Length: 240
Image 1 (cartoon, one colour):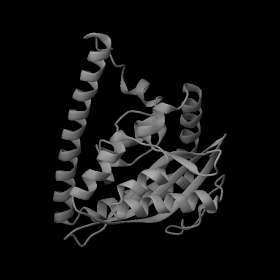
Image 2 (image 1 turned 180 degrees about the vertical axis):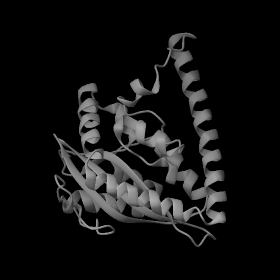
Image 3 (image 1 turned 180 degrees about the horizontal axis):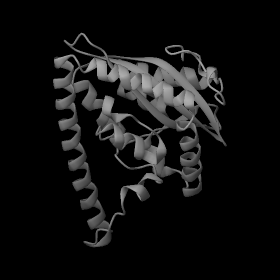
């Protein structure tokens, strides 16, 4: 296991791999988000998601100044890859940086590029593929290296929140994302009602939704929400 603070090399963890093309694409994606370049971010993700676009837009309007990738880890998962990214986020007029992390799937296309399958895009996959990704991600999250990795981010997050300005920013961010999710849910229900003639299918509990990889929709709710949901892809949304 790598010593604390030395996770810069993705191949350090047992079972992880190096994939330079994917690493470069992922770093470029977060660079585009940092630069508020929506078109380039969408191109690099390879998938279009309204929820993802709204999440990034919310970050930009909430004062995102920079978003710098600090560590990147890749694990194989059949024809997919599981990617764990940690980053530091700088908010305008706030000195303390906000630590964050996100986990998602990726798949190489016939053209050689990768699709970055964030939780908002998982519904496009087959049920079997979502289940495979869920099972593999669960295994990865139980790896001691990975648990230590997230444990360090947890500690940095706690320390960062000693900054009252950052605490206030996070409270405002969570409130904004909560409102956005409520509006999105109302919109989705309206669309379903139009398609079904007024019948809105009953949604099962979160445990069932998690296998679909569509729970949370980038809400930016709690740490536990990020750990339990999104198809097992631990988004750590508490940080953003």
